[in-house]
Length: 383
Image (cartoon, rainbow, N blue to C red; front, top):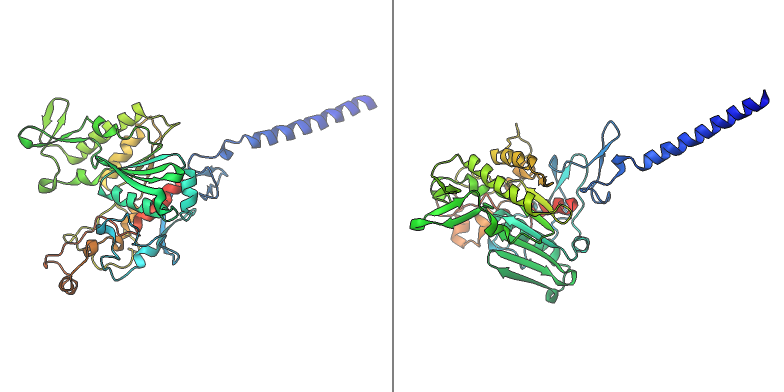
């Protein structure tokens, strides 16, 4: 009877070893351990573990603004800044708006490291497409990187609506393409401005070949009356003189989405759509004047209708587009706009800074250094 017992014990030992090996093998191929596209380096994006033990990427859009005296990451002497956003040069007396960093609740966004960014983007073409707020973000990104590049190893080139900053030693370009509506806006009969909701190729031909595409489009779609950029719409051969702006926006975005689905390869190109930047334009643009601190809290969170439309279009796409949601976090920052400091003021204007004096206040764009630098830190973490 000793031999059967010995065989039985040997069998138990074998089963124990096999199960241990099987368990270890499973742990090695656990899908939660596979790096997410948005979290290739755990040093770059802090991850948060759920109650069930699974790992998921951090939601950058939920958090708070914290004062960080080590900011800004460059100053207003950056040679690539437009006059309209160089608020310190234009005489803005306070500078604390430059020192706020966004802190997500469940993780942290790494500080922008220009050399590391350029190293990751070596031989890549980064293209930002959209309106003047995207131009704002492009200037921010260029200023974030240009300080580590020798003067004779960087340049800016222009090709119609396309402008490109080149870091020659890295063979990297950071480009901006002016297309505030994404689809085509043309002159029609009798010099009328026609917005073609189903045409995009005239703009999109510039986007081919980019490694990273960052889009925005919202503000121009909300203009109406005298501020509208078109006289009527066209879809196919049909002229449409009146249409709900958000219906038009949905049609225009759908044209963009079809182009992305049909023309881009997700193995070759990363596509990010930045949500709309909020404006603080009440009181005819004076709502942001003389604001020196972020808003502390909102009694309720308002989701703008263009963001709802955008989310719906992205969900129906085959191509994996990442939505960079900066809308709510940026809504806190009414202190970050140029206001009257979009240009240098005369002595008389400095003494009479109030509505009705002929001064206008810009509560749409952003002082640089400032808020768009944080959008680009988020973008860097995503890439």
